[in-house]
Image 1: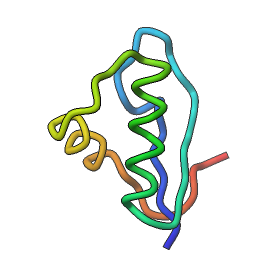
Image 2 (image 1 turned 180 degrees about the vertical axis):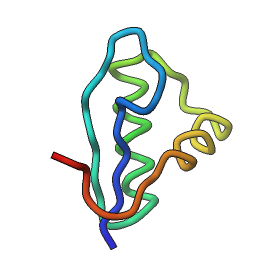
Image 3 (image 1 turned 120 degrees about the vertical axis):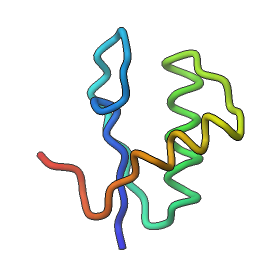
Image 4 (image 1 turned 45 degrees about the vertical axis):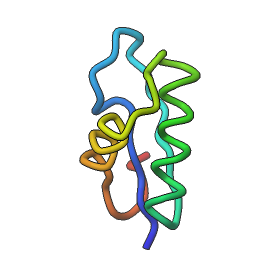
Length: 63
């Protein structure tokens, strides 16, 4: 089943509006973490990955 993370739900000073979707949780977390590191300056840690997993939704992002 398709899964997604909507960056608008994660507190950010830059008001990011990116939504990332993938078919597997692992692929989604990897893509979301890469985005967070590159754009938001986050650190790729096990704790951060656990936080990212908490905001995963099933389905596709709303339009």
